[in-house]
Image (cartoon, rainbow, N blue to C red; front, side):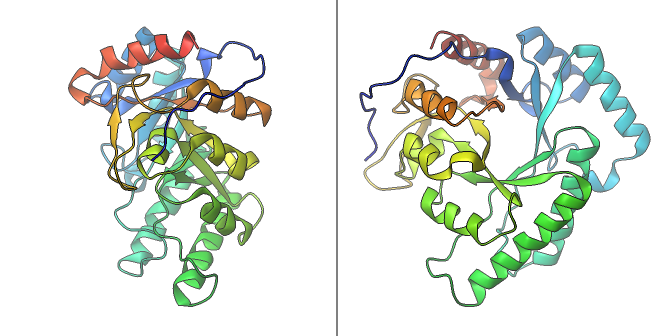
Length: 274
């Protein structure tokens, strides 16, 4: 079980709250309204969900211009495009459609100035041999090459998968072709230490989601809790990220979507006080 450990940490600057990002879809159903709420909350980054209400395949140039105008009006930017597929990239079922949809999301991320597409990648085989490993590497290499062409990168969730396994997979891919989204609460739920994850994944971390959780009796049996009430040692996590020069976004998300705005505001206050 992962526990909140007391760690000695070097002196560091207060957290830069201008790097906090929130999911637009949880602020309001209408994107225009969601961007206004984000502005009112005082956040500068929003994460857009390309699986719900923002179809990359149907986005027109007129639609892109409209979204860019709304962003400019509210003084916010898109931190990343979330594109959570049902299956992973080593799962042959409906794989071609998953690849095509991910490529469309990568193109949309570039067009909206985000540069990152967030998704899980599915199970990582324990052995670096066999057809499942090779399929996963081949698909992610294809996506890496496409991403380099359009100017966006797939960012794999570091939560369920062991950080060492994710690092092993990244090493088998083109340099910079796959990055990591460090989800602190998910790491705890699945029995991993977020600080160790930063140490293992290092400069591959391109996105961070500051979520909290308590571990269960077995890996995967924990539960998400309100930020600041669980077992994630946020000062130690942020110190480790700072040591590695991380200057990317810190995403926050509510546990109870019915109370999203209040919970996000409280989370921002908590992070600002660290």
